[in-house]
Image 1 (cartoon, rainbow, N blue to C red):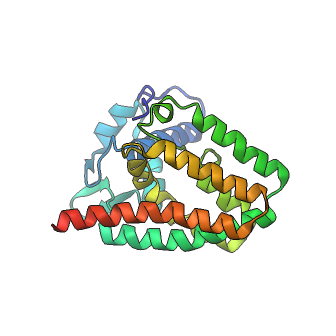
Image 2: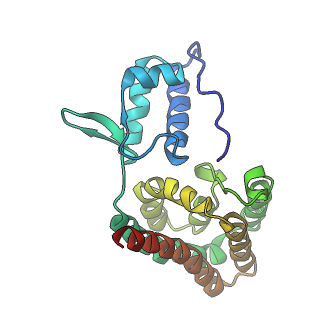
Image 3: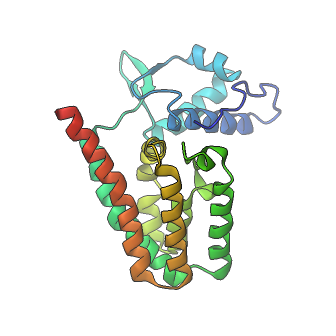
Amino acid sequence: MPQAPDSTLDAAAPDSRTLADRVFTRLQDDIVLGVLKPGVKLGEAELAARYGVSRGPLREAIRRLESRKLLERIPHVGTRVAALKAADLIEIYRVREALEGMAARLAAENMTEDEIAGLWELLDQHAQQPDLQHDTAYYQHAGDLDFHYRIIQGSHNATLIDLLIGEIYHRVRRYRYQLSTTPKRPQKALGEHQRIVEAIEARDGEIAELLMRRHISRAREYWEARQNESVD
């Protein structure tokens, strides 16, 4: 697991909005990395002490994470880390398989040369991660540091971007990370990413879509197998 930075934030930061952004990022990363487990109840006093912030910025961060469906507020219970049922996760992966396949096809048609060069630079950065080099984990920060996010943006299709970079994107990030820690999976995932970029660079939308669909279907099949194991 990637090493988490110091959990204490600078409470003396002059811009409270900046501080709220920082605690939001830390809290989100801790959810994605599994430091805070699904179903765990979160108390404001405990979180304020954990991250070294006052309750004002913390509450703003919590509200934003609730809007992303990463946290949920239960009446008479409090706030807890949201969880997805296995069947719901599999449904989402089926949607991702179709829509992100389409995004890869459109990216092959619409990405600029600079955007494609940026994809290669991003994958080069990923390849330098010690965890990935040791084939133990493949962690991608949200937004422009995430390969899938870049592909979706590269589709240049506003409707598709709105559908994928919203609730779906943020709800599945932690499950993507869990899959990336499967033995021998990180290096394979990086290789699959590289093949997708090769297809995009060749302007072969059909192959780019096929490779992306296969890439995501492997994750869906993994979660289906996990669900079957739990039933057995």
